[in-house]
Length: 175
View 1 (cartoon, rainbow, N blue to C red):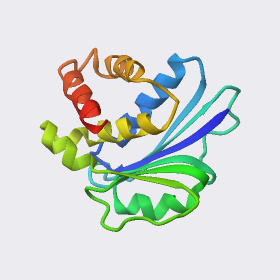
View 2: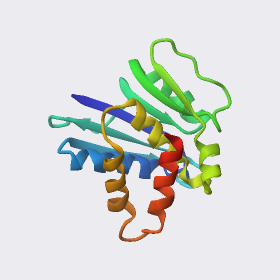
View 3: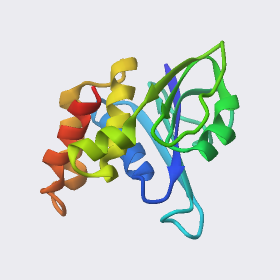
View 4: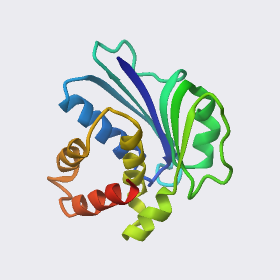
């Protein structure tokens, strides 16, 4: 089994962190994993995306440019750039708070998640990435809520332990 995922949005939305959390979970579960970030020179406010490949066997290349299994798109530019690259039968998770036009494809499953608005209600729009993660969690069998909580402790535990409860609250609100 090999799963190719693209997380995409603009800098400051936690896109790279979202990909790192998914990669961390997959590694802890014993899978082979690659995580490849891509972002503009501006970073915050510029474009940002990362590719995560999860496999039961060695991964030949970290590049994900076609045949995407899952896309998490946080803005219009992400939908424009990556939606056509999702393979038939794949999944797209779209931040409907920001994406202005509902994407259309009959051969994939599209989930519109009101991520930014839900995150704002939780108390901080910066946790919209965690709301998207909960949508991703509901529609894939890659990991559980317990896996996410463990990865949050791995990611934020040393430097930012105060962020963990807010992120967990955002995940639960998104679910």
